[in-house]
View 1: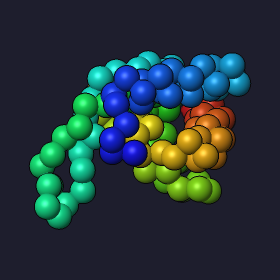
View 2: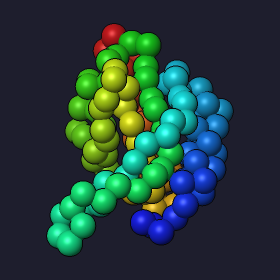
View 3: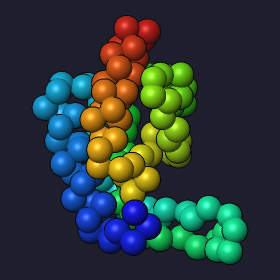
Length: 115
């Protein structure tokens, strides 16, 4: 997945966002430019251009949304920056997208219920 182009990640992110919007998630979604950081080892500082899904919710701040995702099943770990949750679909296999969408919808529902 490291070899996937930023344009391909952006296309996946757009399709994923459209799926969430059709589901009536209540989430605000945008695609923004970003970087994927490779792990440690031989190239710990290499950054790869990517497209990120920027997620916000009107009833819960990004940190609480991230906590709800980490506590869910499956657990989802996302970045939080500048008041938003950031997801890099470069790190999500296509066959994992359905589980990620369900996790986000649950977190959004919990956000609406918790206020």
